[in-house]
Image (tube, rainbow, N blue to C red; front, top):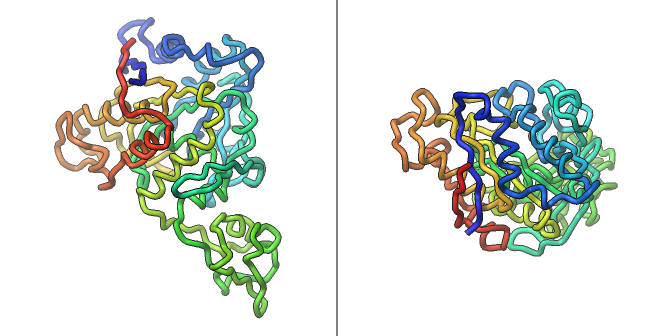
Length: 367
């Protein structure tokens, strides 16, 4: 069984405060032993879309930064740009959003580095050869880091069911083209009304699958591999983002991405899930719904599957919050996560275990 360390929420005196518990979890879980002297440690964060108020507090991240430095590492906070057009789809706006939400050097004592660069094109492509994907594309900052740590706000997700360590690493580090791979099971098409025939998409297509016909781009469905490069290149948004992946497909692709990112770092990665403010939707939306259960606590592990399974189990062991998106009274043991979006949320855990990402069997060690 994988070990998952757990600190309950709540404090009645100075020594029980949550920031102190973060450091205690780091020590109890033995994370310092994963970090070599002067090694780059990527702390995968989610800085929150402006308008969201339940993203992970930077003060918690500071505790982990302090412990990484004590362990001899060089920490940096990082995330990759978003697929959708918002305030985190390029490095300039993304950094400004992070700073707006308090992820400043004066607060976290570490720099913020956008993992896939200015426009989402700073990525590496690595082979995974799994059921859905042969290769994955993810941010270079994650690739070049010696250690990867996902520091996640655990919550529900409108397509993936849950957002924990697997989503934070797999979807979070995916390049913009990689995120399109995960979100869609079909190839892109061109909107002729918006296309101006500028040929920018031709430059970025790796398969020469695009031609210009009558002044408009035309994508060969036979040659297209669905990489998404044309979509993120188009200056007029004539090639639309597609969001048509099934929940199971998206979850399994996230697991494949996580596997590919961590496969050479399985002994150099660790995870924190903050089971606090368990909202119905992820922190990518510019709002925050009422938490579906009371705050639970913080879990830490070196196993991304086990920590997500434990986090979901801890949520479902609570009573549902009145007034949340769980509209009916639900007792401990009932599946509140499924109730929120009517989704099976554990495809990613079953598949992650199958491909060797981790184990769903765990034991809780409470500190």
